[in-house]
Picture 1: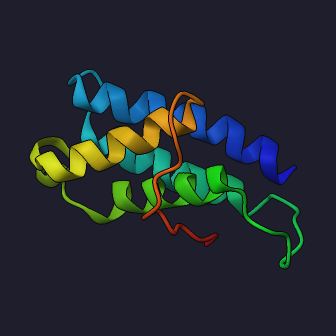
Picture 2: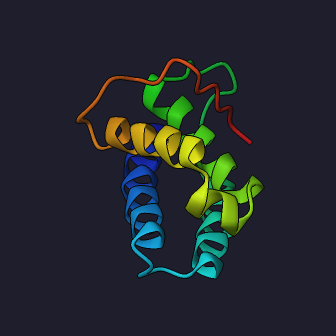
Length: 106
């Protein structure tokens, strides 16, 4: 159940964030996606000691960044955009795992 949640929500996260950068998804939709994801997460049954996969760590990292940083920073900070772009490529199964992503479960 945990990995199917991460797989599904990671694909949606990539869609929303790429849409935001292409100015097709407003920032408010990112916030709605974040809160919807948190609500859905509360329904996921998993073991507290279940190990993280690299994909899950990157997923939680990107989700946190999306919620924490301002619209301006998410859209225009070159370092932020580059970091998150690399994360999305990994979540889509096309790149290597970024070493500095240490996302944790809420």
